[in-house]
Image (cartoon, rainbow, N blue to C red):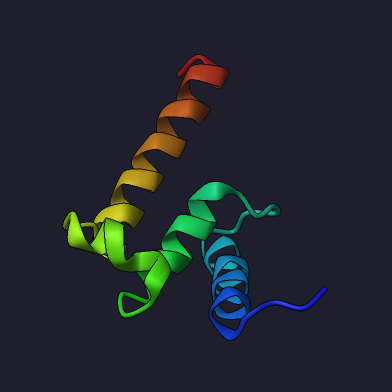
Length: 75
């Protein structure tokens, strides 16, 4: 399947984000992180325009994932 250059970059970025977080899957959180990491792209225009940065997004994603794990493990 062929993808545009920006799409390929986001998909590769999502893989890198997942690896950095030591996840064994690619989820929407990884795609979002990859999109906002490239603020000059069309896909990032809206979230970046709303003030979303990779750093803010990463902080929020990590917090939400920790909360999910805590709820599932009863901690």
